[in-house]
Image (cartoon, rainbow, N blue to C red; front, side):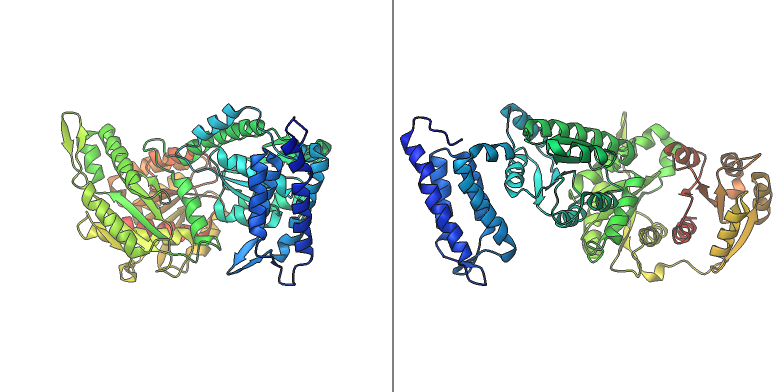
Length: 550
């Protein structure tokens, strides 16, 4: 790095000029006042040091000087060094002095670029997509240099030299990848990983550890809590390769779990996770978040007249239309059938209404090609904000948006309404039939629902359920999927064959979370499903939603 390459001027510069400037900077900091005020020309001196180091191609000094410049702050006419940065500032100046005499040690700590083409490839990979990386390492020199290379490759980098601050960044930013060193000065690695996994539990976030050769045993100890590891001295090309592999894998997993196969928009599972985040996260729940449920009008008539293939085309056209008109921060998902959810984070209700109302007017003029002909389609919507209701439970908010949706349906369709408490359900004596062969589950449901104005009935198997249903014509059937003799799916098929139950909503209760069983329930004619163990708050909200629809 600083070896005599035949250029006498460079040699003299390295041996004399930086040493004098650095020693004076150290002296300035050590003799600064209690308020950490520094000489007003210190920023100019740092800039001159950077400029001259660039001139003589002393790359490591250039990088270290840039790092020093980020630590000092202007406050009016004063220049200050925050007290919490003073130790790091002095350490870095001391390292600069050492680097002049012993450049090898510094070189080994900095990440290396072996092949510039790898960096260019990664930059192309990131074009048009913002991927956020959290980078954590207590070595400030390494941290800043690595962050600089990641930024050059097209990543948005949030960095920290402290574990606790990094955990806060992770909560606030929902990163695409997390990279951290093992020596975190304010938290031990086990506690950091435990807290980290609690924060990214529902997200697919690759975790990469960077360590030294002598830390292999520790890396091996935590290998089940991370996705990959890499050793220092770091070759950035190798890190890029690992990141690309992990990010591609995550992308495929997200598509499988989070994307609706037909329409290509987000799935029900994904939107429910996002509702939980925006309505329950301490950072986000103080903001207004608008939620809209959108439902295609008379969609059953489309399927009956043109067939399900055309119906699917209409769903795809609608999903693509809405998805192309919303902000990148908005989240659009298919909730089920012809029903979709649009979440508009940090948006007031009236602004959401204006946006969706404009979309509604534009969509009704759109021609949807169906071979030699075309059709027009409209949709209705219901909107609610967490700031307009006394609840932050996602399912209850969803329930209120649904009430507004069906008020729009009952008002003639092809319109969007904002939820109003006057839209609440009329007080009626609804009938609910609970079907489950497990006595303990039936008792929980009977006890949990008894305070509502509902008439409750129970059945222990499918055959008994059908007989009671014929006699009572319930508004809602809560149906367990796994029962002896006639299981819940077979029971549901029999119920759907009887026209007397046309207005009866069926909510499947299932202990199996698999997409296959859920799809089986919906295909058999279930209106909704809820997995065990379930929340009574969520179940009541689902029941209310079904009562509104039917």
